[in-house]
Length: 466
Image (tube, rainbow, N blue to C red; front, side, top):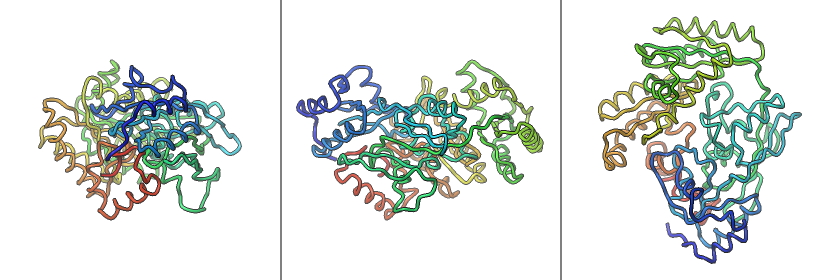
C-alpha cells in the first residue's frame, strides 16, 4: 500500500483541529502508542493525535481520507492480536479523551457511553444504580469499552450472560470520509435494514471510528458462590463442563486453568493458595443470583457433580474475600506469563464438548515441536487460550518457525467445528491464518464490505484480512 507521507503542513492542519498539545510526535506518550500486548511487536506512527469529540475525529478522518494518510484508532492498547499497531505509520488516533459515561437510563436498563471509558469504571458506574454490565474481560480494569466493541470481546461470565455483541444496541460511528452515522436504535428489537451495529462490533477499526455506544444492562445479582475444582487429568476437567450443562445447571462462569497457568499466576502474585501437585487442571465455577438459599443448593449440586470425577480437594469460597483471591489468580494469568517474557497468545474457540480434544492436541503439538505451552480460558463457551512462551528459540524460529505448529493447531480447531478467535480478534498477528477459516469467495466478500466503508483503505490498514 502506498500512503502519503505526513509533512509539516499536515501537522499544522492537525494542530488546528485538536490543539497543539494533542498532536504528539515523540516522548513517553508517543512511545506507548507503538505497541499493545501482542508479543514483541512495535511499529512507529508518524504522529499520535488525541481528539476530544466526534467533530474533531470527523475533521481528522476527512482530512486524512483526502490526503491518503492511514489512520489507526487506539484505545487502552491492551489488545492481544495487534489490532492497534500502526504498521503503515501515519496517524494513531487515541480515544483516551472520550472518557465519559454520558447517561445511565435506569428506566430502560441502558447506558450511553463514550469509547474511552475503562470497562471496570463503566461496570462500577451502573452498579451504583443497581444495574449490571456483565461482560468482564480479564483486563477490565484497564481496557476501554471502545476496544471491547472493536474486538468483539468476551469475558469470564460469557457462558451465562453472553459477550459484547449481545449488549450493543446502537453506535455512533465516524466513517472514513468524516461522515457521522448512527447504526441502530435504543430498542431491544430492531429489524429495520441491515444490521450495521453488529457489523461494526468486532470490525477492529477497519470500517469506522466508534464515538458513542448504547448498551443494554441487566439487574445486578446480589449473591455469588464460587468453587475451585482440581482435576487429576485436564481432559476430565473439560468433560466435567459438559456434565454441568447436561445436569441442567447454568453457572455464571466456568473457567479452565491448567497447572502451568496457575503456577505462573501464583508465583507472579506471591499468593500460593493451593498446591497444584498431582493435578493437571482446575475449574473455577461461579453461580450468581438474588436468592441465597437457591444458590446454596446450586453450589451443592455442582459439588456433588464434580466429586464424581477424579478430583482433589474442592475449595468452596463463600466469602467475598475468598472469592476475590481466587478471581485474582485467574485474571492475572495473562499478565503473569507476559512479565519479562515474549508470548504468543492464541484464542481458539470450539464447541465446548470438543474442548478436551483440543487441549490434548495442543499438548501433543507442543511436545512434538519442543515448545512450552499451556492453556486456560472460558470453558463454559469452549473459548480456550493457548499461551506459547518463548524460551530457546532464535528470532527466525520464533517469528517464522512457529507458524507451522500454530497452523496445525488452528486447522485442528477448525476440524472440530471451531474458529481462530473467540474474543481477541484477528488484527495483525493472526490474519495470515484466515485462509484456514474462509474460502477465497468469503474473504472477497469481506474485502468488498471494507471497500464500501473505506474505499481508500485508510482505516487501520493491514489488519484482519490477508
